Length: 443
Image (cartoon, rainbow, N blue to C red; front, side, top):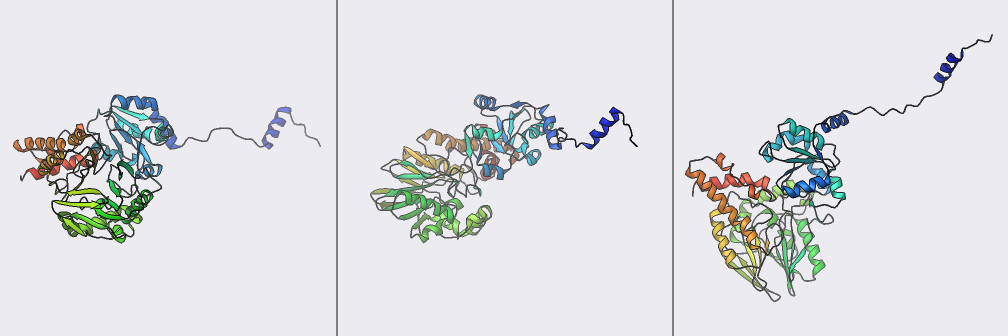
């Protein structure tokens, strides 16, 4: 028997038998909704606007909310005077130590604008009133080839950057003006060398064996002359832990007598600290000591170059020395002089003595200075501003606090904003204030 199906029911029946394909959008994730909600209340800016704001006010606090490993892997961050890396997950815990007032202008960014909108919203929830989000993100900034602060300028080498000619056979591999890290292989100081027709003298052994080896590889690209001397500016790890590599090459290692005593007293802790930070990059590094020492002055004649090693007086560390080339009027100052990063005051730093030592340094009238950290310069005024003048200012401020029977907590409030654009300011400013206060209490 044939059953009659009404046309409408027939059509519905056929439709049920035919597969259907939905073109609906997939459901929104919780993260996407959070970003969407954040964007309703935050102030987003683009690349042109960020450039304009940084030009108008270099003191704007720029916060990179990517992870440190991500920054290292991608190779850098936006170059700005006031810049700090605070991963988004640590923002609530760390931002107050870097941003002092709730009305400070802040711009946050990440790589692709997924975390930074949420970070901007978080800062607003914490009470910060002048927050913007760089919506284009670091990847766009990098694509446009805008200024970047690199974590490694020479990724093919253990060196942070490759040697550059400073003047007439004097070269320097300029280190990162940042703390020593795995990414920069501990190359956060300047490794300089002088090439002569009879051999090479290197100033600083480097942070580890492999870093010293990498520097030697670059030296051999410039000259066939052997490395005859290694001069250690002091007993810090990045100055001396590469010593055993150079001794294997037959070089004579020279240091100040006080630096040698520091190596013997604290070398085990220094190398252990380096090994924790550099991990696999620390292999082959063993603790080794200087072969020769001097007290005030040592003169070396090498291939027609008159080289003078000087202990001008107390400064940053026990046994700090400088290298003077009188014919070239060039000084490799070591940690006596600073410019692009804030100088560090250590527990054993003699700030009063450092100011007096500076006068002896200026009396030589160097025309070119390779500082311990940062690029070479001909501007003695800049070196004075960020070394002697900083020390004088800090000591004057601490003296006022002591006269008023103020506590160490008052020292931490000293206004150091004129130096806040310098690298390592966030790491060192408060430490410097506290250490100068404690030292001056007993002067």
